[in-house]
Length: 266
Image 1: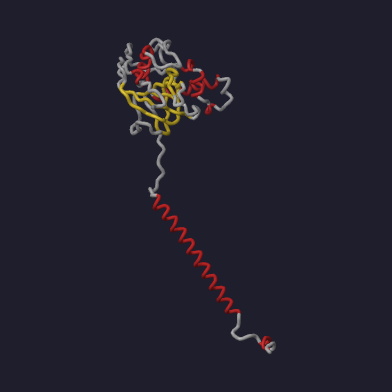
Image 2: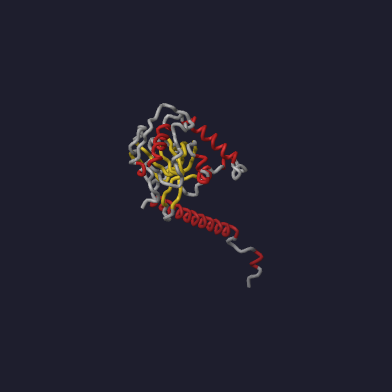
């Protein structure tokens, strides 16, 4: 049984009704993206499919640098205005925690999250009028999320990124926050995950350290030979030292007894 319910399948039958244009402004225009029907702490609904697909189409045309800059500025504003976290260094501002506690303030705003993926799946998009065909859903765990994942939906992924249940380190994403969606956890409780809509993921895989692959048999065999060699060297050294002591003793004892000993002979 999967720990979380995929939100891709929840929208396979949902379609959009507003056509996307060529605008690539970072800020979402309220006239084009009506988020008033979006509700938190619920699964995705049919009414939410239009902003869902519309934002996914929109974010593909937003320059990544502009979106990242806007996300940094918004995060700075949240940190600066926070009565709870403003005393901490800005670098330690817990974005995931702030999202969970005040999702309405993040609705439609750009946000950046970093951490590791615990799952990445690919699916065909549901019927929509925005030209969105393929979707990727990733479950991203951040440093401040206490192992609770954020749901990332994007239309592209970096080359070579594995699909499946493998843990993928060094992942970050910048996209638009839509809502808190619900999912059933392994402990049979309903939990909430921030839903982020993005163009793609950023991935900086950790490079493997250079070296040779050594089997356990060779490794333990080498250790055993080294131990035997150390013992043999110690034994030979002790034997050599004993011979030196014996030789020095023989040299110090004359073949004939001293003359003063002869006077003691009966």
